Amino acid sequence: MYQAQNITYAIAGRPILRKVDFTARPGEVTVIVGPNGSGKTTLLKALTGEINAGGDVSINGISTKALKPYQAAALRAVLPQSSVLTFPFSVHEVVRLGLSGGVAGVSATDAERLPERALARVDMSGFGGRYYSELSGGEQQRVQLARVLCQVWEPVLDGQPRYLLLDEPISSLDVRHQLHIMDIARDYANAGGGVIAILHDLNLAAMYADSIGVMSRGGMVAQGGCQDVLSNTLIESVFGCPMQLGVVPPGNAPFVLPQSARRYA
Amino acid sequence: MTIFAMRQAMVSAPAGDRSSVARLVLFGLVALLIVAMGLSLFTGASNVSAIDAMRIWLGLVAPDDASAVRAMIIINDIRLPRMVLGVLVGAGLAVSGVVMQGMFRNPLADPGLVGVSAGAGLGAVLFIVLGGTALAPLVAIMGIYSIPLAAFGGGALTTIILYRVSTSRGQTAIATMLLAGIAIGALSGAVTGMLVYIANDAQLRDLTFWGLGSLAGANWTKILAAGPLMVAGIVVSMMLWRGLNALTLGEASAHHMGIDVQRLKNTAIGAVAACVGAAVAVSGGIGFVGIVVPHLLRILIGPDHKYLLPASAILGAAFLLFADAVSRIIVAPAELPIGIVTASVGGPFFLYILLRRRHHLAW
Image (cartoon, each protein chain N blue to C red):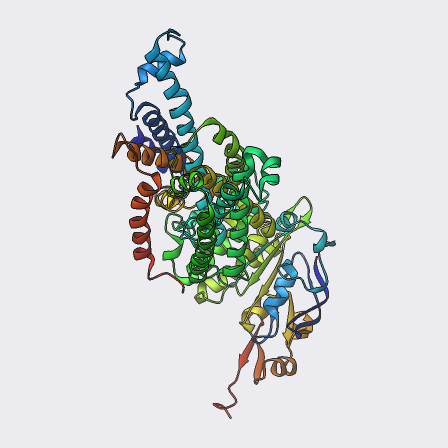
């Protein structure tokens, strides 16, 4: 379990996170939603230890303060919103970087082929020889995901579930690849790992999340199952616009339809 | 063998994996270095040949043969220390370039360009000029190591200042870094100038010679004094490859990937200061090795530090030995300061990089 309790963080006296509690369980996809500036990315940074926030964060019961950087890297991998590379790396070399810090959990011989497998996983087979800088934004994002997957390839290692932390993993992807990446997250959770993802698309959140955390103004206003959290009043008040919630047959997949107050008034 | 072997290696490796090519290039570079070492040992103002050297080393020289004794002195006490020094300085400067570029995430960072060499120079000049008077007690303690250690201190201090000034939240602004380098360099130059002003005649000759950069003063004492620091800096740099690789994605990502970023940066600064400080202390201001060598190698084998660091060490050593050979041959029997040779190769090369990158520079 990836758990955060009572997280507070302020920049120059201005509170960014106010006593946030958050839990992500192994075997589940946990999605964080909220409007711009609600503190989603800052919460993710607190979870990874990138910022020194007040409160307690623990992974599988171990406080992150007690974990050395390499120990934390063996338990969780992080996909940032964007990555800038300085030097002319090939796509294969970028993905291989994921092996340099983490513990993939595969044998040494398998590790050599892992970058190729990871590229295939994100539907980027055949791109290994290209220069990273020549790819489109969406392709770069998928390559970065392949790198992150390499770091914690096996979702469970020595009985310890591992976690993928994804900050807007699908923001620059086309629809097909949005679903593809969310399927990867789903599969990772189904195999026993945990996934924490920040998403802006409420429909994809509703479709894939086992648990949704809703953030607003630095606080976690609700966390729970889709049915419990995605209520008209909560979503409308957090995002500040009218929303229509419903289900689509045959699977009764939930959907969220924002409605412009101006156009349909 | 090379082209065929390279093709073979590339066929079996996954696309985009340049590590087998890098290994082949490493072998090629070792061969190049051996050639450069031979050139360094067997050419020079006096015509002592490879055959003479072999006879000396194999003990085939009669002790009463005057010309053979002279040849022995030339080989063992002049050319051999000069070659060893060239290898150490070249490797140290090239490696410190790679480490700085990795730490600043910027292919233009070079110890010479951003004032680290100037800072190291200031430390060295301080001890050359004041070593007999104000700093005499320190010299008494540190002995032959005092100038290399002073240069190390100066180099470390400038690197730390440079990093503090040009980097905020893990992002280095290229313009700030280069400008800060100019400012630090100018300040070090001004203080160095004042020290030169109060120097006596003998010190002045030392300083002038040293300032332009040269391997000519090489002897075993200098190698003993600066060698350990340089070897330590080079060895430590080699061990930073994982961290420097991770850092290319930014400090946050490096942290996520399990790198202790603060420790990595401290170690990198120490290693750079050791390499540059020791190199400056014994051979003065030899510039551009740290930018030309890594840049060429990135084109050839890619930016993976696992291979870039050792390859740069070897090519840096070979490059400096070739430059030294040119400096000795071109105006023989006199010789040109080697700094002039490296600068006349490196200056245009640096301009070329700037031209190619001018659309990508983030000002």
